[in-house]
Image (cartoon, rainbow, N blue to C red; front, side):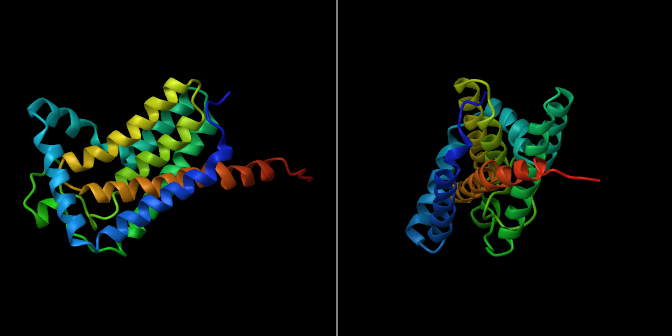
Length: 209
């Protein structure tokens, strides 16, 4: 039994689209971009050496390696349907994020503003955050299938943490991760809505040899 219905996918997809579109539109507003820089600085200045180590060690929870790892763990636990969902939605979110980067040429914070960088230099444009997209998409799918409201809430928080961690380690601005999270929410919601419906219809077809 799931804690959240997949029937609300349309509203969540609209919310994701609004986050992505709003973040993209903000790139053309100098006053918003100045606030963007200050917000990122405030987050990083609130940390410490211990937090630096912890965030650096966990920020890749939104990577394609995390997608593969989560899918493998779920498959080993006998939850093959969820494993396929995580693998599928994670790869789609990553692909969509990479494609979006080619449309927006934005420098990374450490390139444009001399922000400290705690991880290896990533490739591609700063907008949108691929890690935020992947993390949010996976969290959306897994939270819908969680066995308790608490577990669903933890997964939602984990998705938000992955997004914030990319700002903290200096490779994204806040609007980058907002846009990435919006993209991930769109992908995850569509996966839980029409994609899942089509999948169930295909599985139920009476194939004859």
